[in-house]
Amino acid sequence: MINDRPLRLGVNIDHVATIRNARGGTHPDPVRAAKLAAAAGADGITAHLREDRRHISDEDIARLSHELDVPLNLEMAATDMMRAIAFQHKPHAVCLVPERRQELTTEGGLDVVGAQDRLEPFVAQLARASIRTSLFIDPDEKQVRAARMIGAPVVELHTGAYCEAAGTMRARELARVRHAAALADELGLECHAGHGLSFETVAAIAAIPNIVELNIGHFLIGEAIFGGLDSAIRRMRALMDQARSEKSA
Image 1 (spheres, one colour):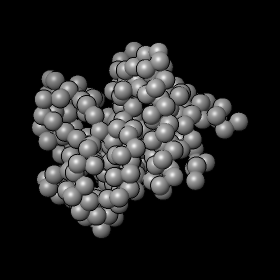
Image 2 (spheres, one colour):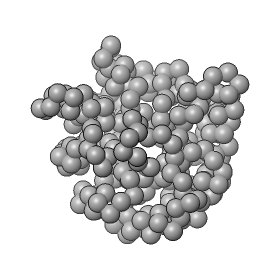
Image 3 (spheres, rainbow, N blue to C red):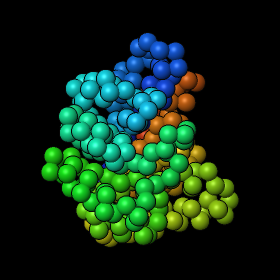
């Protein structure tokens, strides 16, 4: 049941807030960045509200919820506090991610296999509030099947290992992503992917026909320093579209 819809791009604006928070105050404004991203071709905006609030703040989420004209994907840990925030702001979607206080970034996927009893009611509660939930998981068959078992409609495959690998190891990691995406599609799950994607690594992932959305953040914000956010997003969008069109030709 391969989906023939165009590949969507979600832009994560967390690290605009990281720069703001390094000095305090209100500049640069992540909400302004989100609006610029949408104008440049982003189909949605992703923001991770961490427990320690190291980048995105509660006020940012409130403003994004009210001011965006494109869908907001709220990344969050599966905690009671975050569930209450999701209920309050009703984002288009929630992506459940693992979260550890000492990590610099999300270091791996959720262990859905080991946390089914906790995650299944959490996903169901969000669904009853009309919030679509995705699970950020490693490209592993057991994790994909577990996501299906607990009723999650979407999985987002962690592409960090693929992006960090080289040579034959990168080819092996790419094969893992392809297999997981095909399995997700076979099981009726919508499949997204993200983490660590760059101009160099995005094409091979974008060419996987079972994947319908990529979420990219840190690289785009970094590139914006050199050539502007608009330029970085438009180039990424073009690389994604080219890879998808060549695969389907």
